[in-house]
Length: 196
Image 1 (spheres, helix red, strand yellow):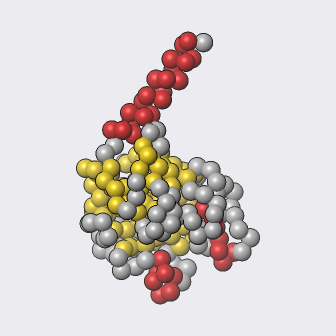
Image 2: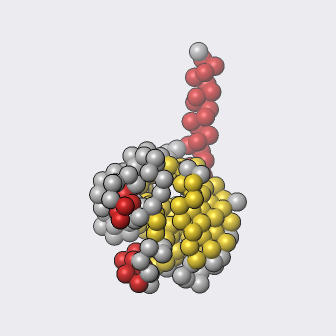
Image 3: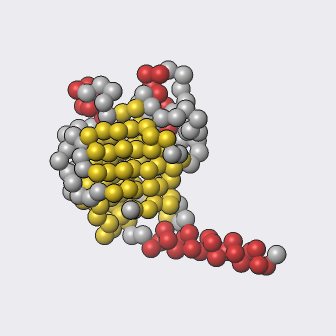
């Protein structure tokens, strides 16, 4: 029994240590940090930039959790950040994952390039090009695994191993900061981020 307790405590400490070792700089959000990154709900977008983490091309994987509440769950990752308002991002709208209306399901995953190309600009100017649906088996209230393959100018996103988005960047951003991203009025949770 003590052996199992010791293993559990060791695993918890390793998970917690990994998260605490990651220094974050917050923009328009507050943070609870344990074995999971929790960003609170607030007006406007928010990001937690990972300090000393530059990213150009490669693979980023992470687990993320939003919630199944209409217009209150926009969770993803910002990358190629130049500053707090200029970056690209891929994010998810869990409240659209399993809706019966195909039109809404087609808005489940989104690429944006701020400040010029937010979702509404892209949807207006390029309908259906920078967003897509994901596998409807994905539970909007549970953790899901994301793999982003970024090879400028191509971006491909996978959820739980299934490809859900393939776009050509609309920006010319090639390198920069990486951060946990939430949209207007949204909170979110992340864990197990890795870079290759």
